[in-house]
Image 1 (cartoon, rainbow, N blue to C red):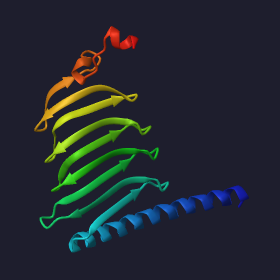
Image 2 (tube, rainbow, N blue to C red; image 1 turned 180 degrees about the horizontal axis):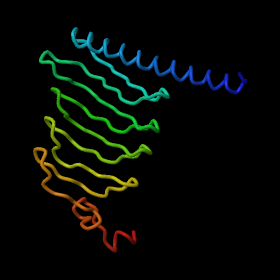
Image 3 (cartoon, rainbow, N blue to C red; image 1 turned 180 degrees about the vertical axis):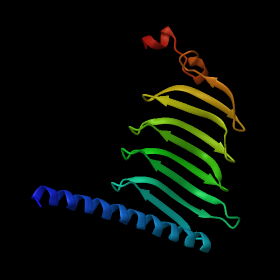
Image 4 (spheres, one colour; image 1 turned 45 degrees about the horizontal axis):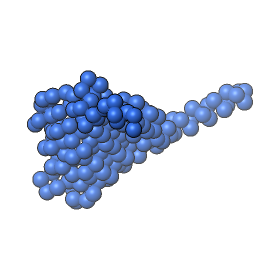
Length: 163
């Protein structure tokens, strides 16, 4: 057996061992999560990818009615945050944010009782490119700031530009 082949086998073994360790870690977390839920403790669940980067984090507790209360986060393969959502009474509630692969903000929304409510701001290249307005989870209006900058309070005039 050549030295190169031996090194390749060692690398494969290390990867297989790492995968088995991750599977065991996930199983252990599921057991701990079930135990925490049964006892009414705070639940913290962290899932990692095969390279050890965070993938999903859930930090919550279960109320007496069995509903989740807390924060859920997910990450892109790059390691940057992908989204963050708050849960109340087992439903999306409060601010929710989605992010592009590079970590910049993609959308910020508000949720009430599991549905979008109010303004959902859409961003590209760190500029607002649109605002969706929701009422009870239904889209009721869309504002395009390039077409109607006054709608977002961006009144531009010749006088302001010269100042």
